[in-house]
Image (cartoon, rainbow, N blue to C red; front, side, top):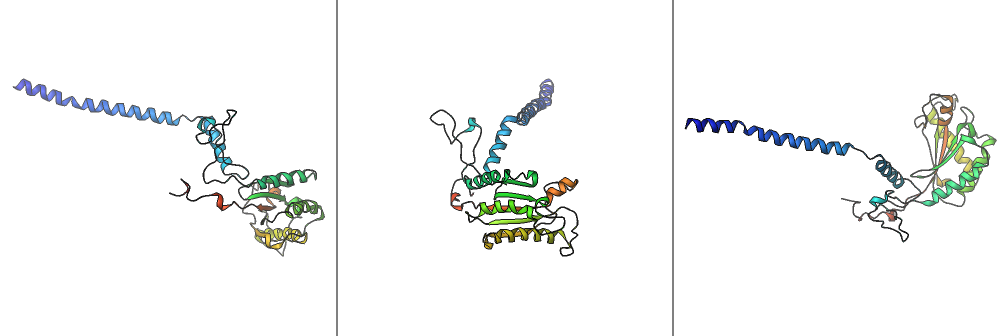
Amino acid sequence: MAHRKEEHEEHHDERWLVSYADFITLLMVLFVVLYSMGQVNVEKYKQLAESMRTAFTVGGPAQVVDSQINQAGGTSEDGSSKPIVVPGIPEGPTQSEEVAGQLTSMLSSQNLGNEVSVQTNIEGVLISLSERLIFKDGQIDLPPESFQVLDTIVEMLRPIDNKVRLVGHTNNTPSTNPLYPGNWELSLARATSVAKYLINSGIAPERFIISGQGEYAPVFPNDTEEHKAMNARVEIVIIYKIDSNIIDINSPGILP
């Protein structure tokens, strides 16, 4: 009887080994899963990033660029994969890219270098005019050499009726103009000067939205004279509204 009791206690003491072994096994499985999740496929990541960039950039339908996950697009007759249009994301106003391309072509003959840039963004067409092109230091009067580029912009604005946003910017150099003691005032006055030129050239004043951001929205750090010159600018945004009818709020996944 004593021998059986001793044997029973010995088996009871060894039961923890079973639980311990189960715990170690689960822990090993957990580490294997975590390791697998940590192995990022760089190419897949780049493709996903490109898909997201395309989806939220004006000028084209949102597409999934990886043909292996082309679940909704199917294939064309020639066997190539069709792009997937993401539900709820509009294809984007292609007019903005057309206008940007035409404007870039028209300005390229004026040898403006880096003084003018034209690009599309989520709002429409963004035209950036540097201070060196359209203003003297601390001044708001437009010099004659700026007229040609502004006339080109007028030519693009005349056949359309889009709203136009004008935003003045400065670098962090304090204003030396006693009429505009701060960069807020100077940037707004410069945007207004450009607006007045466009209005006097025949563009309706009710189309304009004018603001000044002073030194507080730089595109580069104000650490060199070149960067300061690029930060002091006036931005002209030709706004392209996204058609709200394109987005169906009843579509699956738009609202919870």
